[in-house]
Length: 220
Image (tube, rainbow, N blue to C red; front, side):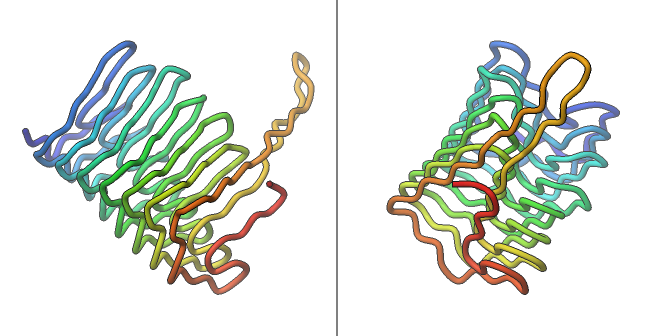
């Protein structure tokens, strides 16, 4: 199944997976779609299993050009396929996780994406990522070209993060805390970035500033 060249004024130009929905992708392409708020695929409190196919060259005026995952019951499992060639001025070229969403990467490839931060994968505060296999390579950003953690958690036990390039810090992985400012109804809260590495290969990444491979800035 192909979903190409669609335009949306909201979320998910090609595909919107809503509450309790399940989307299994085994082949086909999702490419050159344009969304005002988020990119080609928007998953909200639902399941997305990517086993094959290609998601590429989608654009958005917001964040997360390829895939945006949001909601505590949202889980994306990637075991195959490719997410590539997204280019946006804001954060998260290929995949954006937010609001307690989870990404489990076991295979496949995320490559050739460009963004301000987290061109490959951007994990926002309260969201979680695991990586057992697959490859995040050849992405470009100001910082955290391969993987960017903002007050979030990533456990990487396999796979490869390689050949990513940052104009500032961390070609491979960038991790930093997030401070949610106080308002009249809530106190200030700090979300700690937690990066756990055991078995993943981080190699051949470059940066003009700090940490060609990995930069942990106020995280653990």
